[in-house]
Length: 287
Image 1 (cartoon, rainbow, N blue to C red):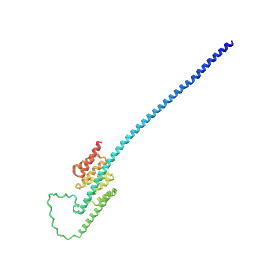
Image 2: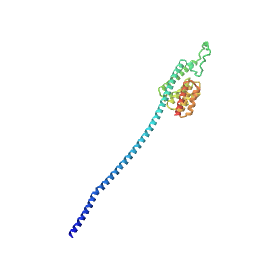
Image 3: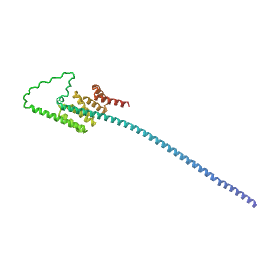
Image 4: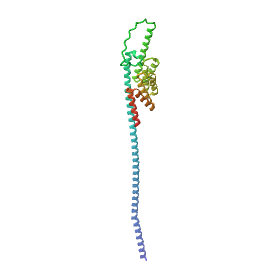
């Protein structure tokens, strides 16, 4: 009986040992499977994070490329505007220097021959006209009491007007456009009968134009054109009327004025400048 109990106990102990062994050796395998599954999950998470970071990086690169393209377009536009401004300034500087030189030569001729300068509206004699014979010297008459004083006063007045005009013109050449506009206005008010009056209106317009006061400049140029149609400054004044209209965004009116300059004064420098400005406007509209 004891032996049977002993054998039964031994058998039970063996089974318990087997179960314990199975459990002992089974746990590391299960734990290893768990660890492998966790590593896979971590790996997948890392891969997803990398993919997300890569997508964000691509988006950032694309956004930067778009910004660079926009900036390049803006730079090209600014370069184009700068080139147009440089061309315009060169043309205006050349035109301005030419007019200054022409006025200086005209003023010198007027000073050398004041008789011709006193009436600028007289047309030049025809090349085929017969020369006028010199008139016989009149017998000097006794001078009236007041005439010598009146002649002296007129000469003094002409000299004073010339001096005032020269001062205003010097301010213009020096770039002091505020002073030149004020001096030319004063000249126009004080010497309304001066033969220099048409030129004074023209340079008054130039003084305002140089300071971008295009409306007042245009009015001065238009006054010259309407009141002194025989003046040699009329083509230039009409040209500047067209320029002023363009600066004030009156494009159609400006184009019409420039075309009128070309039609009325073909071959003149003002007509050439008008045609050049019209070509530039046409090129801008084509772009």
